[in-house]
Length: 142
Image 1: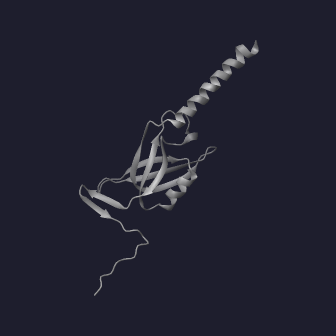
Image 2: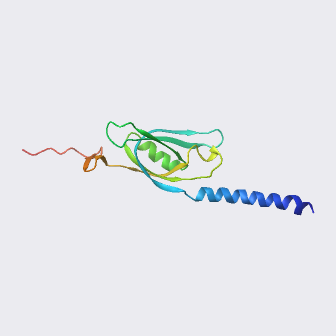
Image 3: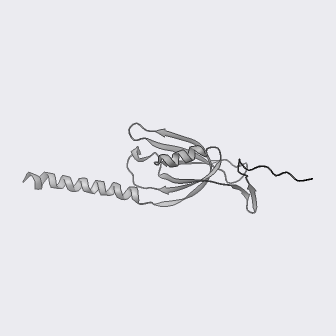
């Protein structure tokens, strides 16, 4: 009798809560990429440590930079971001909606991949190509 009145409803509620979290963590409201310069990445949290970052997005030279705040769960992705700090990068993100606590991250944007950007678009049709740091400079022959 105790099982049917107390434990069974408690188990059902617990299963619904676990199912909700599993669905919220797997389902993405949106996904995309943002390009800019990562200016901050820190490992923070009291119990649930997450990587929290800040990327400066500049649409045109001289424009005020917009900040893109993001969260990283994967330590390998955080290491890649740290390695590319100071360079222009594209962050691939997934937006998660409905996570009730900050234990999952401080933002709704979870970065899953980072790639270096080799060119900077100044305006439509005007692109600045950046050479890799290890590429030797070419010298004209006499």
